[in-house]
Image 1 (cartoon, rainbow, N blue to C red):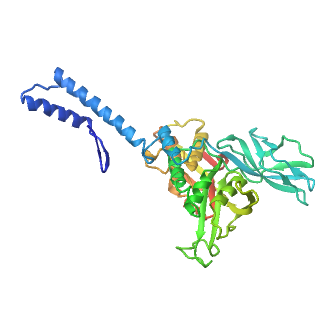
Image 2: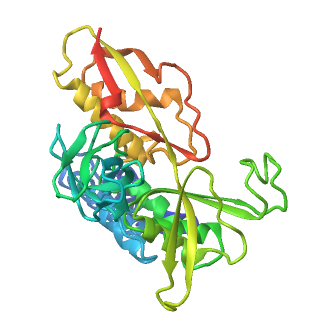
Image 3: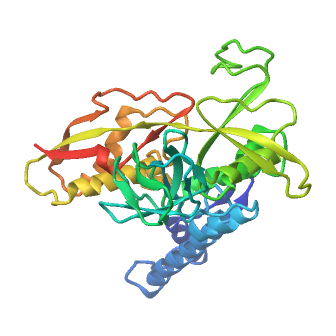
Length: 406
């Protein structure tokens, strides 16, 4: 049978099983007729197939306990040992600009609706219109997944609010995520292993990824006594002995509290972009409050223009929608399986976008149509890698992905 060795599970193939049993027969009688047409020959073939199938089943059971090899429900069980659960998806979020009477209040829980798609968005907290009669508010979609909202489409106020006259979204919504892939769950489980610790970058990341709705997180640290840019120790020019936390998604308070639980009492939290400051209250010691500063990433929209050549006119009519969906899944890390050899974890905060990788979601869609191919492809008007700064995150929306047939 297969063996457990220091190198792991050693599988015996069907041919090896067949040869082993054949030799046992020949050891008894060297002239034994073992032709495949004979009863003994057929029995050997059957035994080899059955034993190798059993070995493969045992290998699956063995792999199911390895977080690097387990899949689906098996990976969920392994991840649960470190209190890591698979996200069923996160909602999209968006910044809204309200206008009305100065001093009017935009109510937490108020609902805004898209004029084009009918999607609904909920305001996350109370906001007060300033002296010019405006306020910027964050809203979250009521549906889980990659709900799209192009700029200027969230204009319908469903919940009546005194003194609030109009609303719009100056920029597109940041898409949420679908059910977490195995590859993404493995990365989150790996980060969560450090979660029980404290005063560490790893434990902070583990705590942040445990926050509902968090899609991406990054923690930068300058442990030196100088703010001077150093390519190794302080590449981003952070102040001396400081920490910068950047989080995409999640409720402001929940994110701030996760940082509070793991933050070292010494180093300050610093602003590196779109900063958010929240006063948190210790759940165990309610008299202890502390301001926590973290950052939201600056979003960099990826505008993709694709030209396809279809010599045999085989591509379906909805090819643009199919490619748009593939790009969103690709950027989210849910399009491909780890076993396929392609990138399968999406794009992180501060991660540049390789131009060559953009062919993957396109080819994933057009592969069944043998004579169709990409004749031109640009990203933000160029055919080069797109640099993303350490405090930025690439943003992918369907409206920014166009497909034409040459």
